Image 1 (cartoon, rainbow, N blue to C red):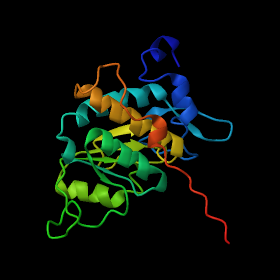
Image 2: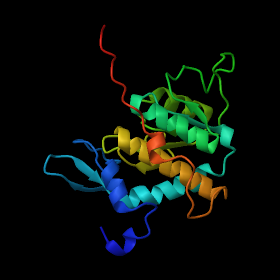
Image 3: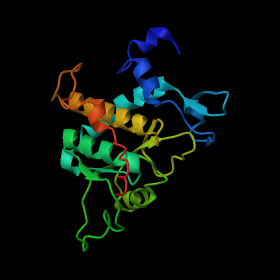
Length: 210
């Protein structure tokens, strides 16, 4: 990558790399090709961090234009749940970090119904129920996209590793910080109170049997 551009990244390039935000899968789609930087010796596709960084800025500005509680954020993946909850704690968005109940966006007769103006998703494959309902509800969708994902019905994509534990906490922390900067809640170079570690899903060990 060009060194003269790296100094303008939202975080140091090494922080992106340490979190594995750039590591994709061994599969790619026609939609993700434009963001792929290279392939590793193990056959993994590597995402262009300059594009990831650029789209975090765009997504931050876009999401900051909505009323906080009208932003729905969902992830059914285990490692996405705590990052989503912390993201919503910081930004005031509404978290759906467990099973997405059919009709949440489309059926006002169920208790789980929620009127949202925009949907932020972690994984378009795992969160496909939410994606299909957002289309029916005609609300825009922002989603993290890995190398094996498609862009169908997604309005704004952020290329990133959307399955890794460390990558997810880093990306959602970064997006939350960018939204708060765009809202003017913190200075343009300021940080939020929570750290990246606060966003990380903890791995619990089963208790030994007595």
